[in-house]
Length: 111
Image (cartoon, rainbow, N blue to C red; front, top):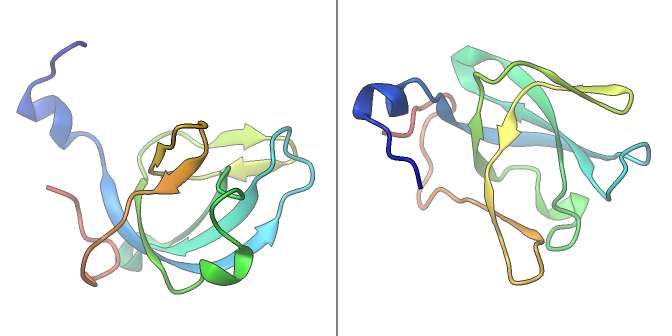
């Protein structure tokens, strides 16, 4: 594992946001949803997330998540992903979302 210094870590914009909307993404190669998230003063952004194994579309709206919002946009099929939704792989490689223990303002930076 490569080590980084504090200045390098500070460059990663890990921000809190609230899921507003979740849609199917049939064009994705692997099962995924399109997820719309409110990052408060940083705006509303969309991403593609391979989280279909542990979450239904109905479970996700209103949930606060942690996203990396300073990666460049990435095209996935016919869709532009604007941030990375963070999570951990379980024993099968399926993603479980990183979570926020108590509500924080949308746009808050992880420190």
